[in-house]
Image (cartoon, rainbow, N blue to C red):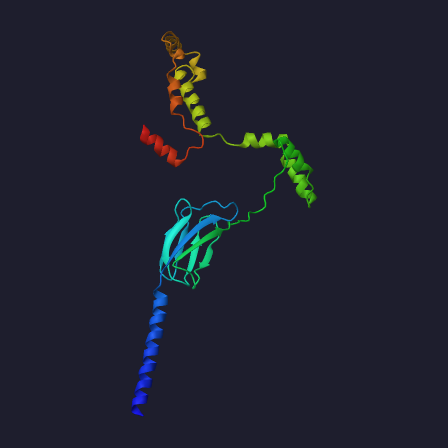
Length: 240
């Protein structure tokens, strides 16, 4: 009885070992995965597409013809990604041969953009007329828009606008030049006409050609530009 029991236990253990050996051999069998990644719309090859195996923790890139060769196990799940295309998932069949060849089509990624309205206005004047003819919900808003676009009010707004850096500098330079040239004759209009020394200085400045000098024009070379920001000012300062 003991011998039969011993033989039975030995047979059960041998059967379990054979089963585990066969199972382990099936899991250790690697498969050469040869895939070609193409675009589903025009069958164009997709180079540098990334095929990633999450179970193994490694991946590979396709060549210029969309071909990739990598070793996988039967049942592995592969993730294929490419810029501008939706991700694709592929499961390696468990009953595959040692070399598994497959073509993987990729679908382009579609992005929905917001609606853009284009108005058929060929000029600014046509746009103004269309804008004024537009029916608004509130009559007061329509009247305000019409009044604000009147040419007389636009002229007033233009006159009220301040001068820029260039205009201010030119005005200041003109005032300084005028005061330097006429400082002896026009410093005091009441006394200048009756002061002989002022007349002598004025006639002498005319003979010396002070009124014909063009040195003041060099000052306009240093005139600041319109819309000058901090970066442009520092760049000009370094160049000088």
